[in-house]
Length: 469
Image (cartoon, rainbow, N blue to C red; front, side, top):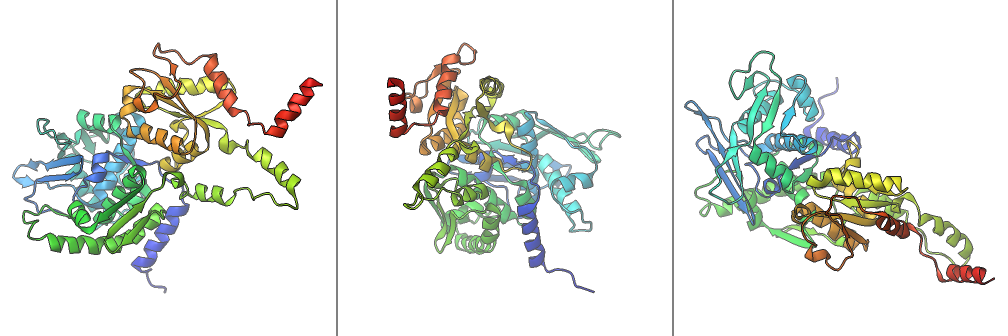
């Protein structure tokens, strides 16, 4: 009888399935929680406060006690997976309440987890992190005048609820607190892959490092280097009152764990822009190459038209002309803040009625990687239409979309919906739609003109001779 596959073989098989299976919708995390992670190891039960700061990001997590017993801080890959899942559901629906239909086993399957029993089984470990998350409060930012608020203002989960025990027949749900939900939806959350996090569920440092690098790949402008001192301070796993005296030990442990887990993370990210050096982790982000790493980007690169040869000049020119007008460059990308989703939908409908293709992020199919799709759509668009509002100017996502379009040489077409013209776009002609109306026929004609292929000099001369005759 064949033996049980080794752990390494099981992991290799899981990674193979990860790259070929139908993907889950993306999870989301507030940006601050990608820069300042939850503890990746179980803290001492006496540690009820977890505070981390990384540059402009700061979080404070506090666990509450039930009676004389401290529940403990959420920690590890399962806590990250749960939070990313709940935030993703709330961000997509625009509602703070997430309904959880079905059994506990069905919920685990939705997270990509196998249901195993026993003291160290996945069922018990997931239930423990659910209990810790639902009984924790958080403050995001360094404003100490703002008190910590519960992550979830109400919840009811398979036999337990905020008003324990759970009433018979009550539905299963979690509801984010107003402050956390507002920060999630009005901030700039980072899209993370739930399938990857489910593979890293029992590797706390691996999950935290994966989330951190996912965020950095989207936000680093060109080149960034993280030395071991920074990474040790960033990822040390437990609150240590003697951190200064134990710095070298912590640095050794973090360096050892990162060296062990980074190859797996790079496999999941499919990124060649991250490298492990003797001095730390190195990111090399070049704007003009930002989209070359996705599978579709690589295929597009391999399908570039060959240079016309001297033997077959007419054939090469004949084949090349129609390719310029394929569906790869046939749409207008609409960049907008979340608050203007209705207006963006109305604008897309207007362009569709005018026989123009418009794309905004509601068109992403279930299972597609949100970030890669947005990248591809900006690279392949005719022009980027940005809806200018104060919220859009504060949105990191909108600003990144505009910057990328500029790097790709795409025309930027601003529509001023509210507020003032942005300083970064004050050299662009803009449409004033502050009256709430959609842009008029002149704007639509401008878009149609951009869709017309540019004529070469011989073509212009032929048209002129035809007109003169």
